[in-house]
Length: 165
Length: 341
Image (cartoon, rainbow over all chains, first blue to last red; front, side):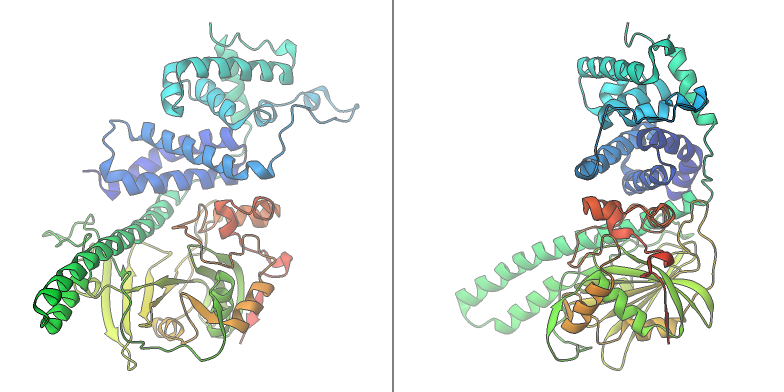
């Protein structure tokens, strides 16, 4: 049976990694911290019952669910747009370029999760599908769509990869 | 090809100023333990309710059949109604930390009312009313960092005679579990019970490694209201840590606050509720009715800190986020700071 000491060790070992993933999902460090804490508390409540060999796997599933639930609750207050805001014409070229963070913000929460899991967490399509409770086909399709959006937002010259060969 | 995206992620992450995670493990552990206690209490309540139904049937059958066992029936009900102890275990030799503490609450209402509320019109208790009442009862000092959390709960900082500290109050419907006074508890916790002259039970809990709840006083008012006062030795999470502080009030003061007759888990004085709801209407997420949340993400600081820093009012737009119940008004918003006494 896992005990509190093991949990603390787990948090110290995995908390940073988890929060980084949360950051890519929500793009706000404070919210990422909240999501991470919320996730870890949920995990703590199940800590003695987690049978998975890798608690981090379980933790990541909880984080994704917490994040998507959070976005669902906030959906009425958010306005999504695929239009990049105008920037001052005289700005430096580097400033003109939209960042990956900005581009991710223009994806739907689920598409963003897929991209983050695929390209930040480096998971396979199959693993992403399992984590999000989707079929591999859906993950492939949405990943393709998300990367196409990123390519459009970040500029053709960025040469984003073909999504899933 | 994928490496290009990977490198873009890494590049942008390296340019980010990542906040420190110091203290997060302890914070999560403290709040996790609290959530576990609340959950255990709910399980105990459910078990008790089920046992009560079974007990009621057991009483009804002999009464109908024999028509003479009223006294026995009461006895049966009394025994059945004694609080269940799903979380109670005997501490193993050596005092392991993993012994779950018994539930401190049950759904059962005491038959007696030990601390009676003042007469007059009443209205549904709100977190705003709880905060308002707490501010009235605190000793002299400047208060700030107000927040609502839990189902019916409020938080404030108090900068008084003992220095700056944090105090939280939560109202529960039900009664204290008498077994909580006698059962084994984890080695990092102590529990003692006492009785006030009014007959109300006071449960004092001390947790050595929990700076949010190192001292908790629960007073059972006997009318279905249990008042919990948490006297912290740290402040809320500031993004880096829970800054250590001293207890802003003593155990005796906390007990006096918890035993005040104004508290009511269902209703409080209507004028107080009305005024408080109006006074704290500017705080996003002001829950005027009992909410069914066990905890709030960032309840001990993150959501509030970010809300205060950025001035975001997510709750006022969506009104449904968990953070909305946990937002602290900053001093600049005009509703977060005042002076008592």
